Structure formats: structure tokens, C-alpha cells
Length: 411
Picture (cartoon, rainbow, N blue to C red):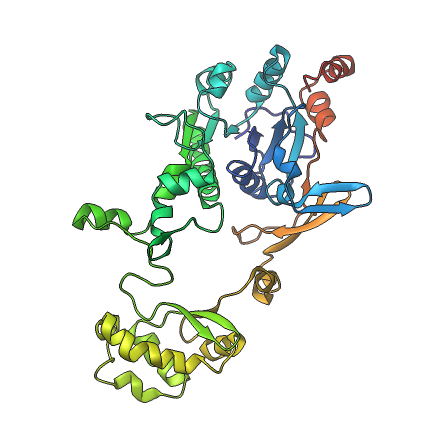
């Protein structure tokens, strides 16, 4: 895979993407999360920030403190395993250094507004002249083409324009999803597209532009809304916690909170009836099939009261124990309960990262590979932390040139 035999100092030693070199120009989340996933899988990711204007998420709360250090836990969550350098791409010397990096890299990831890199003379067409095998992944609000491509965007822009906002929330009250799902989904698609393009570059020696739009990403998360409209002209509306036709399948109150209960199939319904000591309900002729239980009137009159009776005097923990592996039932947990969940801890979904002198716990990787060796404690780069390793040891600048670039604030 290597574009160069010149290995980056301090490169990760483990992971299936070991040897892949990624130049990360992204900031905030839609981009940094993509490159962090690549780094988690073993790629060497060099996070490049403007020396005068580094990623402003470094100032986002919550802040973690240890001694004199006061650093962003939010930044740490999306930038582990990366090397950090500073570089001003607006300067001629900065562009020259970046092109030198590109000649040795496999991937460039950026999330500027489309056209920004072209104006700098560093667009895909220019970079592929330096490295024909280069994968160039551009993440933006509306994509690299189309009439809206130049528009600025945030996560909410994607949720609004991609259709998700209009169908989420309670009936009559459209509501954004309670997380930055446009940023996160775009990052996931970007990582997938990048790895796919890398495989082609490996086999055919041809690079690709991977064009990822946040609006596109959100649009693909709208489940059956698109086909319901194209097939039957139905426009999706907010349903709250209900499913459009499957019942029982939703949120139910219990003694100390709420649970999700989804025993809508005949098999799961029979298991639930048995588990709650009412086996005769499984053969009740009014509710003994999915089709009957799906009927809104039958569900409201018969099924829902049964479930509320089962759950009213039981806690979330008690209900989870009753359900076990017999039918779908999950406590609706707050984040404290999830972070302390023994199952999540057993799957290494909470990891500690080092950021300067501070330590912070963040979510781990959702990609679990068999035979993967445990690496060292993940580290998050401070601004320009690896300038010397990259510019002196990897690119081969001499000390005098390096110090001159520092003094002129190119790096």
C-alpha cells in the first residue's frame, strides 16, 4: 500500500490499516470522527491545523484539568491515535510542504466548504498530479456537486434538509435528533468510502475523489419514508415513540422509569406471556396473532393495558432480568447507566485517553476485530506536538529551515 517506504516516526504498530498514511485537514466532528476511525484501525493519521487558527473544538466543554493543563474532553473524544502538526496552507511555503506530504501519503481528508481547496491550488485535480494513487475524501454539507454545494452547513442543516427533522419527535412537533447524527453519519460513510477506494488504489493504482454529503447521509437514515412517498405518496410525520404499524414496539413506563419492549412477533409474544405469568393470553383469540395485535383499536383496548399491568410494579432491572434472552426488552438508560453497564465495559466501549498531562474517558471503537492486539494507551495530540517528528524526521527538513518556518508562522 505504501506510497513511500519512508515510515512516519511514532506510527501506530497495530491494526489492519497499518502502513496507510492519512493527512487530516478536518475540524469539529464531521471529519475528525472519520479519521479517528481510520486511526483506530491502525492508519497513521497526521492532523494538520493552522498554527494561528487550530481546530476550535479544542475549546469546547467539558474541559479536563490536571495540574496546569485545561484541555477539551470533547476534542479528545474524536482525535485519539493521531499525530498533530501545524501548517498554514495559505502560504506558498506551507503549500509546498503539504504537497511534499501528499507525495508520501495515501489519503487526504478535508471538510472545508467545496471549492476551498481548489482556491488554495490544492484540490483533487492538483493533488493527483503529485500522487496519482491518492484518495481524496471531501466531507461537506451538500456535496462537491449540485446547485447547493457551496452553501455553508452544520449538522442541523443536514437534519433539516435531509428529511429527518420533519419526521422525528412527537406528533405535530418536528424535532431534531438529540445528537449530531448528520456529522456522525457523514463520518461513517466517509470512512467506508475511503477504505473502499484504498482497496481499488491498491489493486489498480488509481486514486479517487470520495464525495460525502451530510444531507445525503441523513437522507439514507429515513428508513421507509422515501419508498412510502414514491410508492404511495405518503409523507412521513413524527410518530413519537410509536412504530407506524408494528405493535407492541415502543416505550413503556415501569416502576422506576421506562423500557423499550418489542415482543411483537408471535414467538416473542408467547414468551412474554409465559414470563409474566399469563400464558393463557398467548392463545386469546382476540390477540393471538401479529395481525390482530397490530390493529390500532385492538392494541389500545387489549394489548397496551396488559403490558402496563405487567410493568407497573417492576423496576427496569427486574424487567430486564425477566426478559433475559427470551424477548426484546431494554431499559431506557441514561448515559451514566450506559457508561457503567458491565456489558459495555466488557466490550471495551469505555477507554481512557491521554491528552497532555490530563486523562479522560471516552467511548471506544464499535469495530471489533478478532485477534486484535491491545495497543498502548491512546493519546490525543496537542497543537503542533509532532512538528519535529514530521518535518525533521519524516520530511527531512534541516533544523535551520524548520526554525525559520516556525519563526515565520508557516508551521
